Length: 212
Image (tube, rainbow, N blue to C red; front, side):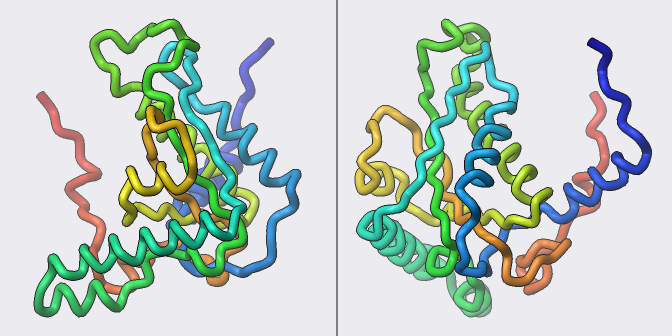
């Protein structure tokens, strides 16, 4: 089988995909077709993984009670974050919308089985964290696939991971990595919301190689 040849037009569109892959917090409430969600999961599973271990575990959270518990987790965690800030920084933090939990039609939690039998430990002896990194690659692959279809993804990180694991009834040995809000974005944008809201700016120095 010959490797595909990607055209300049495709490469330009790929650059656009990277640009428009944003952390979405404002969603429409209409759900995605079930087959679309399934296709996103299957695409995510094309991500690379150490030793072909496929350590990611995607969990659809449909239960209203569990969704409510996650919202409560976020509210308490966010309040703690705000309490740790002061002055203008606290005011600016309080003005940010940091999660789309109320409107996003789909909630997806992502876990990592950090020591799976699949892969037989290959590549993990000296760097066991590679299972976690592999699962994060799957999340990013899911995110890009969603963006390509006009679907928004928001990563809610202001959560107590142990509590999230408990309320979702997941194997306590699995590592909680992400809680994703998924749905059609209310207001698509090609720049980060935190940049547009003046919280932070991109650092040009990050685009330069460090040479040794």
